[in-house]
Image (spheres, rainbow, N blue to C red):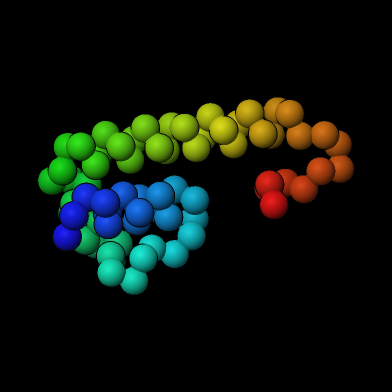
Amino acid sequence: MSCNHYRAAISARATGTPLPATVTEQALDHHLTSCLSCGRWSKHLTTLRAATDDLLRRRRPAGAPSKPV
């Protein structure tokens, strides 16, 4: 399976959505430990997601939903 398939799964995991049907959690974990490029990409995506979530929390007006719609 190509890294593009795994990167779609990494994105899904980062956003809390289901993984693509073609990738299991175990296969993704294995790929992340064996592919340096995808491991780095996953770390960058996780860092970006955390920074974005933090920024949204800081700028959320009173009464706004806790998560963007």
